[in-house]
Image 1 (cartoon, helix red, strand yellow):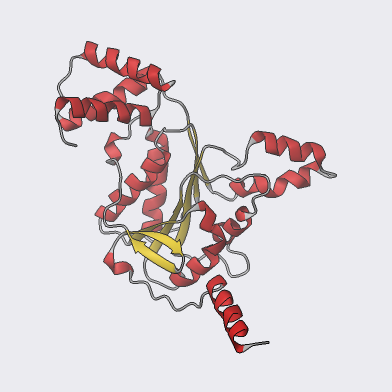
Image 2 (cartoon, rainbow, N blue to C red):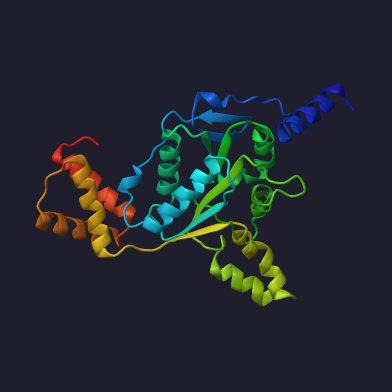
Length: 279
């Protein structure tokens, strides 16, 4: 076997399992994006977020997640959290807004976003931050798994920690449109075709049970939808009559086929542009 061929094999193995030589400096920022080609923590200079007090109609979820985050930031026990439910109702916005608020109070937490497809690398990520003084919230947005997707097994490393245990300075926040992180029809299909239906489904469904906090987000009412827009108008000083706002906002939601916090914000962006207001 040629030396050149052996070198190629060695290079390939190094790419698959890079050595733990990364020494990240988390003093340079408060938010980071985990990359795997190669392993690195990309600094996010400014987190794209909405102020916490603008996230209306989310009182219970907001208060629960904020308290959990404070506990964690102060070194007390805290739970992993799964924010699940209707699209566009502020799940990821709430996570980012709470992190920014807690960080603004000089509490030592860092936000690290990890993409779903990078979950198999989470063991390496934990090895880089396990013994550091900072406290880390790992955040995965829009988390879900298909029937043949085995990435969920990697997630157990941060939820349960295996033999080594989850680091005390790490918790995991995830958002998903699905409470059990997999489609209902896939749960039913596996249940109907397996020799032992309960065991076939249990491994995947039980993943969501490993989150200590389940926070549900449900579609907003029309009154809540309008209240969100009114709150944005007050914050940014946009003048519009009640009648015009209601008429325009309802017409906007009809063109989008539904209403949500995201649709409310998109209407407000259009309104602010037409009014010549910078936000």
